[in-house]
Image (cartoon, rainbow, N blue to C red):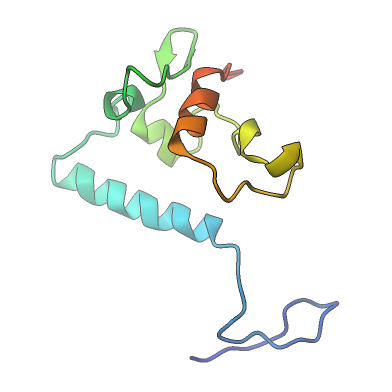
Length: 117
């Protein structure tokens, strides 16, 4: 393991093997690479609506003016979905993510989402 720098400009604690980083932006790259590979293999198409891959009995995917959200919309961040589902926050406090958040809660929020674009 090799590291360089400090935790922050205000904190002179060196980064090390136990330092925790928020990796959400990096996971977007990994997820999209897997999607690209699945498209290349013919498993999915970028134009596939996401409701094709979600349990219809549990979640109603929102549409905007009758247009369904596609895998391409998710990959290019043009779905109109919010940055985070509003019900993910612990005690409704932005910044404190519920560690027990479930797919059921995600499906519930997705079903209640109104797209603005």
